[in-house]
Length: 440
RNA sequence: GUGGUAGUAGCUCAGUUGGUUAGAGCACCGGAUUGUGAUUCCGGGGGUCGCCGGUUCGAGCCCGGUUUAUCACCCCA
Image (cartoon, rainbow, N blue to C red; front, side, top):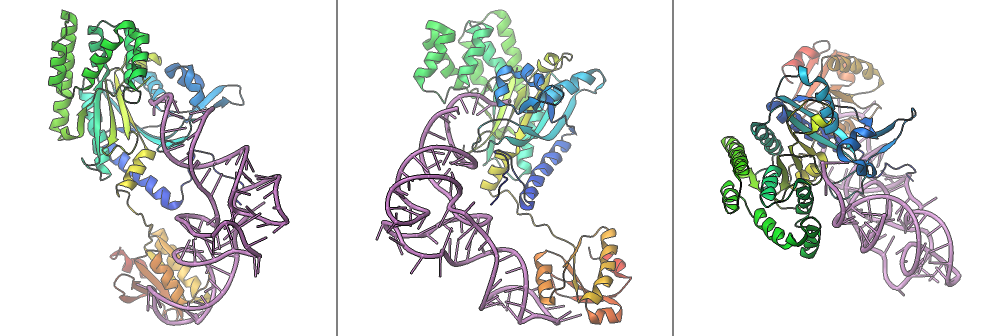
């Protein structure tokens, strides 16, 4: 039957689906604007190097990339951040700081589909650039939480896991690992709960050699920490030189400031310190965070963190930055599962009920006037019995029916019926617009 | 890229040990109905039973392959 199908992982939006899509976008925009972020967008198609430069050549297998007719290697964007970094870098000197931008756009990843993951999805991206301190994280995490609250979700439904790559660096440095080893260890930490113990040990052995077992115990202990005090006392048991003790004190002050800020906004209960979040291969440099549904049925709702080095890496000036992304797919699934996706009914203001061919022209005249004045008006395109037309009027959700049959035509009036309370009044033709103005 | 599960109408599904022309509900369209919305009644359109092959007198049903969807692994920016 259907010879042509949509491509795997690409959705079609029938009107009822599109209404839900619009709802999501609307809340996203609303909340972003409440936090005074400005909307922008980048190109959907970029040069392939933009993405391989940021994430390495391996990601090419996950990209929708091809050679264009001019022989350029190009790719549909898998994420917005590189474009953003370039745009900011290009005008860095002229932009007011902090730079607070958000974007809603389609992204493309050539991956095998599964629950919550498609090949084309829409993501809200929110980024705050130019602020090195945790005040930036406070704004972004607050915005993330308020967005989910804006959909009617509550503390029962979701929470935010908060972690810190800096803290990991400090910890592992104090244990005596160098930068390269730390990268490897964080890669393993990312899989900590998914891999069986033997495999964890085997992978740790690759970076830590014979210290693997000791390292594993240390990481296990570190992962259990869930308070600033706990972190402080964990470090207190280690031997630290003066420089790293100072760095730790500064970092704990950042934590304090971040948590106090969120607390002051009444959001403390949404935040859970969870150092298992390190966010894989990412370019993140400091605090990282992810939002999850509380029942653990879905993959992450949103994720983000600080990426202080990226803008410079993309050819810009030194530019601290924090950002997060929230996809429409998992969010939509969660909203439906929790009964927070409203049923949308497109309604019209008026439905014209037309007696016959003679009346039709008179009706079209009134319909045109109403539409020009901004009202939405529908009518049956083909002649039909009155009963049918009233049924159609009801199911259209119209508030009023405009009735013109032979009687009305003869008297030069339009009968206006309130479909809710079934009251009717006759309006002289030509006065309809004035009569209607007070009603809707 | 690897594996599990599934595929019958627009949707949800039934379909007996393999047996004549594949059904129901919902939805849609038309009529009863050119002067009033509910309910109802009557009728209609719709299907390559995912596709290809095999077994059989005979396949929606059994077997093989393939494809699509879905879930999980890998990955997750």
